[in-house]
Image (cartoon, rainbow, N blue to C red; front, side, top):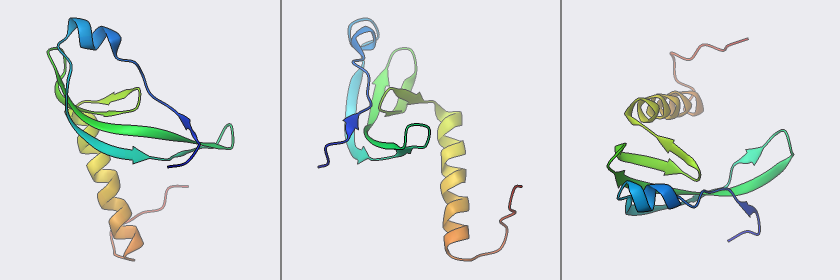
Length: 92
């Protein structure tokens, strides 16, 4: 594990008020923050709570089904681009 700063939330309110339950720990990603020219550690979790139902947490961020669909599409487009496949338009 690296010494990069952890980017996460305590989730105290969700734990005490929404019955937050971590279904699965999904590892840690280490994204770069361009504005500060630094890297950080962001834990990924599959979580259930009474407000959002089943969702994914990326550190302090919670992804709902619409966000997850957009992330899936971004990964699909990345896979196409990395394979040199068709269907990827460059945005200027």
